[in-house]
Amino acid sequence: MKKATVIVVALALWIGVSAGAGSAAGGGVPKVLTLGSLSKVYEPVPFNHSGHVSMAGGCSDCHHQHGSTQVQACSECHRIDPSAFKKNVNVSRLKPCGDCHPASARAEDVGRPGLMAAYHQACFKCHRGEVGSVGKDPKGCTEMCHVPKEQAKLEEKK
Amino acid sequence: MADNPRKGALGDGIREGERTVKENGEGERGTLSRRQVLQTLAAAGGAALIGASAEVFAENRISGWPDRKGMLTDLTECVGCRTCEKACNQANRLPEPEVPFDEKSVFEKKRRPTASAYTVVNRYANPKSSDKPFYRKVQCNHCNEPGCAAACPVRAYTKTPEGAVLYNKDVCFGCRYCMVACPFYVPAYDYESALDPRIVKCTLCHERVKNGGMPACAEACPAGTITFGKREDLIKLARNRIRKNPDRYIDHIYGEYEVGGTSWMYISGIPFDRMDFPANLVEKPLVEQTKGFLSAVPLVLTIWPALLGMCYAATRNKEGKE
View 1 (tube, rainbow over the protein chains, first blue to last red):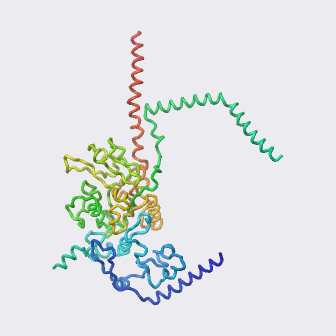
View 2 (cartoon, each protein chain N blue to C red):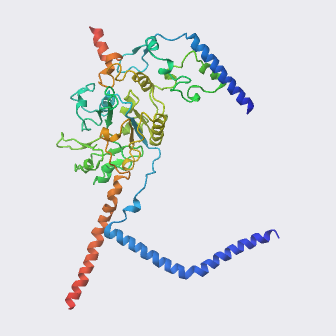
């Protein structure tokens, strides 16, 4: 029992230290991301990540992060399996959303939104009512982020 | 020595038991059975005469089909994009709408599901922020014990183990009792086709669900407003959300108990009656309101004529003798 406690405490310290180092380094933050893995009706969305970084208060405004209000149970993100542990707990790089949020939500896992819902819920925190007309007009979707595929094709022909 | 007390105890027990039977046996048994018979007769007679057996069946929460599916609509998440309406239209091969699905003018009036739209989204003002109106998706709530099915004289409605309430147009003869019985004003009548009239309503995409899929609206919803899953899991999820965000939600899962519970449930940021949800619904299934009366009808129709006939015959004979 004591040994296990020591290991857990040591791990916690190690995570804390490396988290500090990671955020201090601050490298590897993407500038523009193309969100297109779910693209069906609309063209892939170019997401200006660095633009949002400069506006947001911190990473936890959008991402699950230690100490933030969006924090999950540890096991939600980290599988405590020695071989996978090092890879999973790599705090200088956040896990892609799609690692945990599946492309289509599963009926067996009702608490976990699918990827599309997870993205939109992050966007709607600000882009609903306050920025743009999403939430007031169904056309708001195409105003800032989404170009319908049909429209894109028409524009190409021109 | 060690065996004796056990034997003794066992023996005493038996003897005591025998004694009890012997002492109380015949007399008690006689009166009891006479009383029971009288009670049963009185109860049956009373039920037959006035149909008072309703309370015997009341307060039954259905426990069958614990794996049945359901939907949870989180009304605080909906942004009114109408993607669910479009997905429903395509999945059910419904006619193209007169007004396109990205048109906001439809929100100016409150709409009801129709023969060509199994689901519609309505807009309601947000008292806290005019920039963030609330939206309510309306469709069949697939009651645990559906009033439409209870009212239907030809059993055109079926509650399936998967959770959906399905309608069979082949047996329907168009009486529209179900439209009156539904507490949510959902079943719509297809007035357009004179030769083949039918009721139209959401099917909870029963075929898709049976094949392991999920209803089209839940799959298409980009905002994570509609969650599909086991009804039990959804109630836990809803409770969890309310517990974690007490400022965001009112403490009520609409559909958990209303009219005996529905497959489709809702959580909201404002009281449900402000979004036109019927607020005066009983927690008992609607069937319970009428079952006592309706089950007495056949008894009344068979026993009363016989009883009254006998009375008549008895009095007439007397009159004849005098």
